[in-house]
Image (cartoon, rainbow, N blue to C red; front, side, top):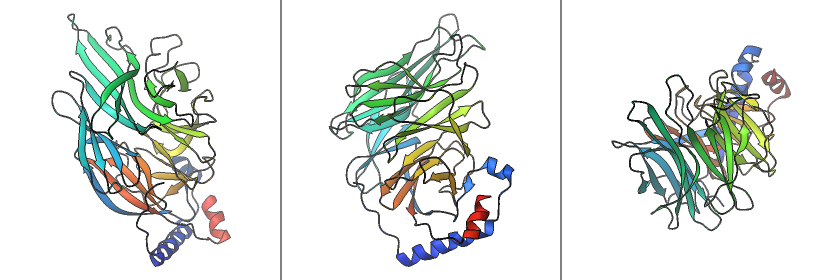
Length: 385
C-alpha cells in the first residue's frame, strides 16, 4: 500500500473546489479548432492542487520506483566525461529528500534512458540504452546499441549485469542512410511475474518494407535472464517514415493495459495510445491520438481508476473512463510550455500524486487529488461543446 500523504485541510479543499468550478463556468465553450489542439477542458477545472517542489538531482532523465512504505528509488543520468552514466538515488521519506546510492557505468559506452522495476521476490531490475558511436579505419561512422539489464539483490546498493534485451551491431552507417538504433526501454510486470520491456526499435529501417522506427516488446519468463521474440506494439501500416517511440505502459484497474508513445512524423510528435487485454497482444497500426500531448509521453493509472497522461507539452490530461475521453487538468504542475522535460507522474499517497521533470535538473512537484464538485447542468453542457 502506498504511504499516506499529509492531508489537505477540508476547508482548503472546499475553497479550491469552488474556485475550480467558477473557473470552469467562466471559460466558455471551445471552438472546434481549439478542441483539436488541446484535451477537452475539464468541468470543473482541476482536479489537482499543486504544492511544493523538490529538487531531486543535478542530473537528467529522472524515473522513480516505489519500493515499500516510504522508500523510493530514482534513476537519473550523470554526464561526466567521456561517457554518461546512470545514478541510483534513494528516498526513505516518501520522495521528499534523496541520497545517492550507486552508479552504473559501461566503459566506452554512453548510458541513458534508465528505468527500474521491482520483482515479486523484491530484487530489482534496471535497464537503459547503451550506445557507442565511433568510426572505423575507413572513416565510416559505426554505432553499437544495446539494451542491457542489471540486477540488484540489496535494494539498489550494488548492481550486476544480467542480460541484453536486444542489441544492434549494424554495418557502417552510410551518409543519408537509415539509423538502426535501440532506444527508451520501459519495464513492467505481468500478473504472472514475467517482466516485459517496451522500447523504440530502428532495426527494421533497412528491411522491405522499411519501418523508420517501431515500438517493440519482448517478454522475459525468468526475471530478465532471457528474452522472447520481438512483439510489435505500434508501427506505421505498410512501413514508412513515421517513428513511434518512447513507450510507457500501465495496468488499468480493469486488468487491461494502456500504452502511450510519441509518433515523430505526425504533427509535433503527437502522442497516441493503445490498450491491450494482456500487455502482450496489441492491435495493428498506430493507435489513437491524445489531443494536445506531444513528445515523450507518460501514463499513470491511479488506485481510483483515473488515468493520467503527460508529455513534453508539460500539460496533464486525465481520464475517468479508461481512456475513452480525456480532460485537461489546469494548472499544470510545471508551467514551462513545450520543452523536452521528459516528464513522469507517480501516485505517492491515496490523495497525492507527484510529477517529475528534467528542467534545470531533475525536479519533483507534489499535487493533491481533489474531489470533483457538482456543477450546474448548463455549465457542463457549455464545457462539453
